[in-house]
Length: 303
Image (cartoon, rainbow, N blue to C red; front, side, top):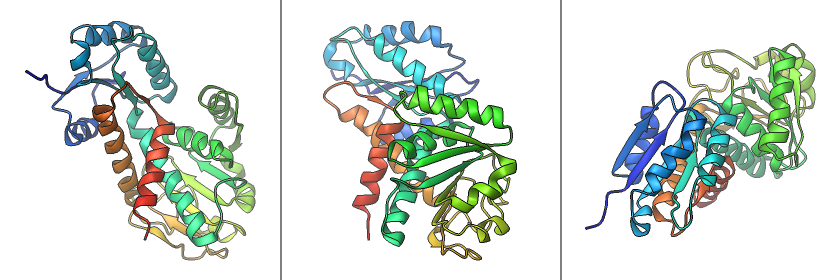
């Protein structure tokens, strides 16, 4: 008898995200089992309990999802999980803390699409501001965009914290192959003058880019906002906006709202959860893979 598809879902938080559970079941996993308040030191034993309890054949029907709210912790846990495998006893693992990796992938892919279709250019060589960028989505988006060749500056209320996060993005997530810089929120009026694109990734209900700053941006091309709670993170960009011009922009910038980004995020997460099910060999998935499938989705749905 064939065994059930079981996804063991680990989180360092008090609760597992219902969003992630729904996504897992809708992607085809039959059982989604939650493990909460997981410490990184517990990952190895949890992984090995999972891999040694099934035959090699049925391990293809077993997977591990890593959630939580901390990007570095999630990536560390992904590495621990991978190193805990004992070939041929291996299973696929997917890290997406707070949905940050797939959300960031959807946002950057959408910005890349607008740069290509509206401005006949790409991410390489562009200057991007990640406003409120010290959180999980901002971190992942900064790394993805920097890996694509953009010059990215993480903007935070406290410069010291923004610098710490920028260093983390460059050295930990970017393996020292990229450079992400930092800036203070108080100086964004200066930074916006040379920005080609903006990622608004701060807390919900906080305006990060005003109409006045948009009007003062001479080369702004695309502004993307992951906030779906009024007021918008970017003035003039509502949740449904999907490449429409931003009112008051003197540079002809277009906006991308949270629901447009969320649609791509949904398909990216669904695709990676299905990839775990369908792959003949174990896969270890994170923000880079999310960006790849987000790009594929946009290409497949280009009008």
